[in-house]
Length: 83
Image 1 (cartoon, one colour):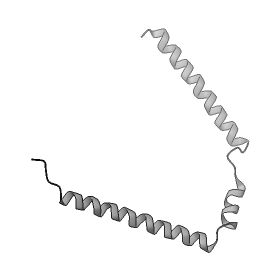
Image 2 (cartoon, helix red, strand yellow):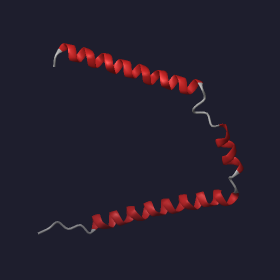
Image 3 (cartoon, helix red, strand yellow):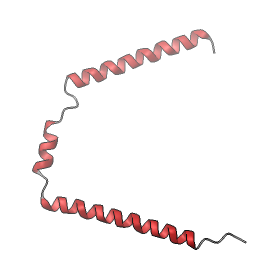
Image 4 (cartoon, helix red, strand yellow):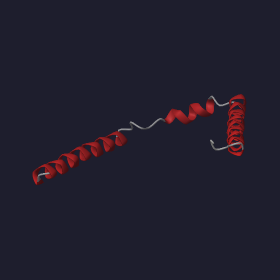
């Protein structure tokens, strides 16, 4: 590659990086990422049934992982190489 092309690529990438950094700083300063009602809505709409559903789903997920692990171990025990 020519030196001119490498210099041009470095310049263009630096320019695009500066534009991205400027856009990020602008978005943070203008509050684009702020969501004050997110946590309030989560607490307001969270009830005992939702929490119990979450616990049950976690238990089912754990049981499913254990079942898959047992099946995998069983397959490894019964493995016989082809003749």
